[in-house]
Structures are given as C-alpha cells and as structure tokens.
Image (cartoon, rainbow, N blue to C red; front, side, top):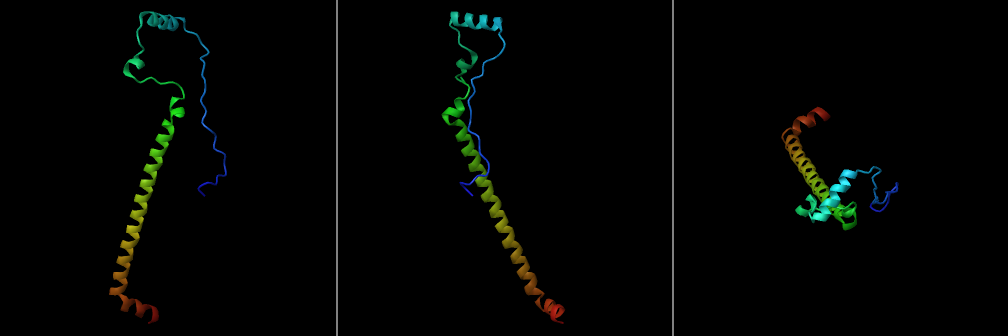
Length: 110
C-alpha cells in the first residue's frame, strides 16, 4: 500500500497574488522610507518572508518529515503498550486457570 493511491494528490502551488486595491498613503510612506534609507520592520529583525519561500526551500518538507517522525514514534509507543497489555492479561489468565483448573474441569466435564 506504500506506493498505491486511489486519489490523485494535487501538487503544491505558489500563487503570485496582486492586490486589487491601491492605497496611495501606503505607497507614499514606502516611497519616503526608500528615500530616507529606512528598513522595514521585518528586515530589521531578519525575518523577511516572501510568498512561497517555504515551499521552494523545502521548509514544508522538513515540517512534514518532523510530523511523520513524531507520528511513527507515537505509533511504536502505542504498539508497545498494546503488546504489554496482551502479555499482562495472558499472565493473569494463566494464573487464574492454573489455580482454578480443577474447578473449571469439574464444571465443564462434570
């Protein structure tokens, strides 16, 4: 089942979004900042972000791989818990049957 899929998974898309409105005040402020040589707040902090940069750089893949690793570790943990419960219940059942075997035998075969 690893390589078989019944549904087509769409590819990631990067959109070039152009706003439909124009803000002359904002344009004037940005022009004035450029003239004065001031940097934007995001650039000062070093946290510049461009649309689609995480998709192109593999950041989304890295997050996905971390998520899958976490899910695999949780799956292994739940499987170990299940195996432990089965072993524990088997031990309890063994001791119950061992201690009361004569009574079970008499009831069944009377």
